[in-house]
Image 1 (cartoon, helix red, strand yellow):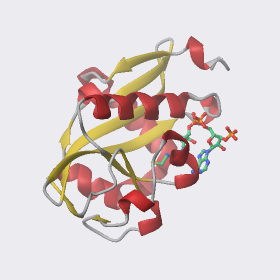
Image 2 (cartoon, rainbow, N blue to C red; image 1 turned 180 degrees about the horizontal axis):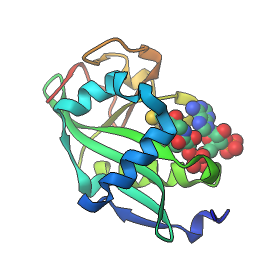
Image 3 (cartoon, rainbow, N blue to C red; image 1 turned 90 degrees about the horizontal axis):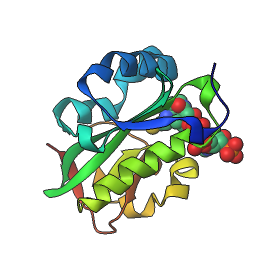
Length: 161
Ligand SMILES: CC(C)(COP(=O)(O)OP(=O)(O)OC[C@H]1O[C@@H](n2cnc3c(N)ncnc32)[C@H](O)[C@@H]1OP(=O)(O)O)[C@@H](O)C(=O)NCCC(=O)NCCS
C-alpha cells in the first residue's frame, strides 16, 4: 500500500541494484514511447551520475526516480536531469518535487547548471526557466518551450558529451 505522506518515504542515491525497478517504473510512467524522446539521445552519449540520482522508496517498493547525466553545452560543463517518474498511485504528495530538488541541489553544490526537457509549469516552481535555455540546442527535434535551465543564464550551444 502507498502511504499518503511523503515524509514516510525513504530517499536514497541510486545504486546499481536499483536499475531493474527503475526500468519498470519508467515503463509504467512513460510507456513504450519513452525511447523516442530527444532526451534519450542525450542519455545515450552522456555519462550517468549515480551520486546525483535519487530513488524514493515506500518500504521495499520503488515509488520514484530521478536521474542525472553529465553533458556539455557549447563546451561548458552542465548536468542533464531526467527521466523523472513517480508511480501513478503515489503522485501529488510532493515526491516528484523532492526528487527534483535533491538532484538539482546535488548538481548545483558541485557547481553545475542543470538542463532538462520538461514542462515549465511543473519545473518552474523549482527555479527552472525556459528563458535561460533559449540558446541551448538539443541533438534532435524538440519543442524549445520545453527546454529548461537552472543555475545559469548564459548557456549557449549544442548539448554534447
Ligand atoms: C511529473 C511527476 C514526476 C510528478 O510527480 P509528483 O510526485 O506527483 O509531483 P509533486 O507531488 O511534486 O507535484 C504534483 C503537482 O504537480 C502537478 N504536475 C504534474 N505534472 C505536471 C506537468 N507536466 N505540468 C504541470 N503541472 C504538473 C500536479 O498536477 C500536482 O499539482 P498540485 O500540487 O496542484 O496537485 C509525475 O506526475 C509523473 O511521473 N508523471 C509521468 C512522467 C513525467 O511526465 N515525468 C516528467 C517529465 S520529465
